Image 1 (cartoon, rainbow, N blue to C red):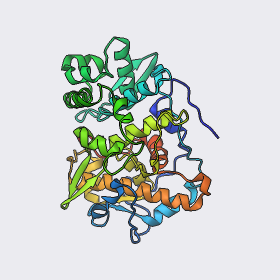
Image 2: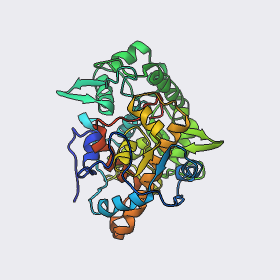
Image 3: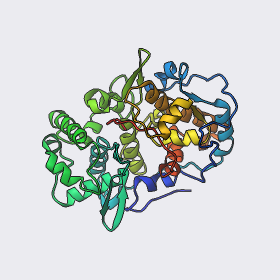
Image 4: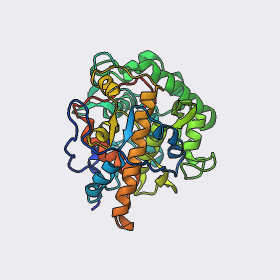
Length: 370
């Protein structure tokens, strides 16, 4: 079955096509997993992100993946459709131009982070085009509204010099956009690099290298994390560098999804994409009993305590998110025919949508990385 979304589709609409009924939670509010003890954890390789995870997965102190539960979930999830998405940018953005679509998605991706006020827990929201938008959908709406009002927000020269009052106007909503100063600094850095090296546009960056995520330092992800510091999403854990690459992967994935049918964004190694380790997917894994947390970490999350960026807790949550989704994908593919094999972002989408609106608490970390 082919899913074609209308022009008003959002990222949430994109993910709806990849989501079926939500599994019943296997946890109580006490956070105790109703699952058997974990068996030995297999090593997963195949991308720089997965290759970096073993020091965390094998030595975690507060987060654990249960492979028995992974196989149990795979036993029924394998028979869901789990389709590849076909995404169209909302509001008529791009109007069929692949370059404009890439510019919009990647410019938004650079600041696609932190939409909840860390003090009040109020989500950023905005009204535009007769609808109410929140989270990353509100980011897209604000950017299109800015374009309507004459702001050249896809131009690196504008991004490199945008002022705080201009940014406050662009992102005017129910509350001040969280981490507005950090977002301004990100656009300044990104814009300066685009102007210096790529004629001010992200599509020139994309077209200037091979159509691969990784290619001995020349691939899209290779270059994004090297040339744009805001995309170098790594943390240290017991002396090891752990690679997450959430936003560089997400921007490339959404661009690929939007242009896949028209072949406007070819990628030869899309199978090397991992999950996008954020706040929400770990919740889905937790509620399905695939991962479990120590009582101390569970209490910190349930009480909305801030978990510092690069702390052992944050690194373990994100690493097990990537590892568990990769393991689930592997187990699902064992049960599917060759023509129905899936890739990890399809699992990420399957978990993100139903748990995006859950009332179950997620960890809170103040960061520009997700």
